[in-house]
Every structure is written in structure tokens, then in C-alpha cells.
Length: 90
Image 1 (spheres, rainbow, N blue to C red):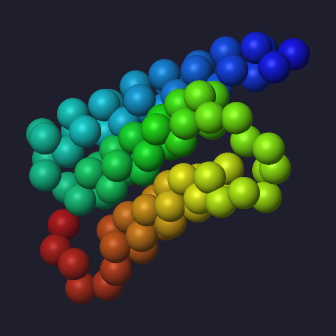
Image 2 (cartoon, rainbow, N blue to C red):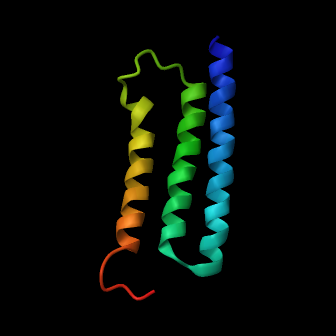
Image 3 (tube, rainbow, N blue to C red):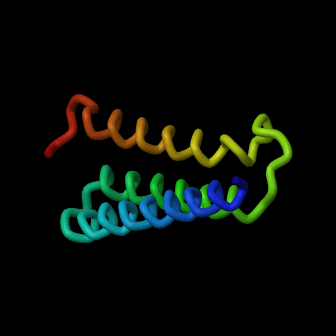
């Protein structure tokens, strides 16, 4: 069963990397910081997935298990708040 979890983590890493490249492409086109922060968030998600599949985590309460996701969601929240901030020119 452990190998199935590794395969699923690899699939999650591949999907996160594809989404990161997608947002990076739009950032290069528009130079909108929303897309750059989303690309960074999903790249961190991909690195976190790879790390979880390579390193054996003995306890899910370890920071390595949830810290990349915390940073990822924080970047997404910052991007959305920054985009919707009043007084910004669009």
C-alpha cells in the first residue's frame, strides 16, 4: 500500500508542476503578480509532494508534512487579497 501512496504523491507533484507552469506562462504574458504568486504556490506544492514521497515521514504531525501546504495556501491567500485590495489600478 505504501507504493500506491508514492505513486499518488508523484501524480500530485506532476499536476502541481503543470499548474505552476500554466500560471507562470500567464505571468510572463501579463506581468500580473497574481499569476506569479499562484505559480510559486503550486511549485512549492510540487516540491512538497516530491519530498513527502522521497522522505519517509514517521509522524504526520511533523512540520515537513504540512509546512509546504501552509506556505502554499498562504501565498494563494496573499495573492487574492493583493488583487482585491482597494485603490489598485487594473
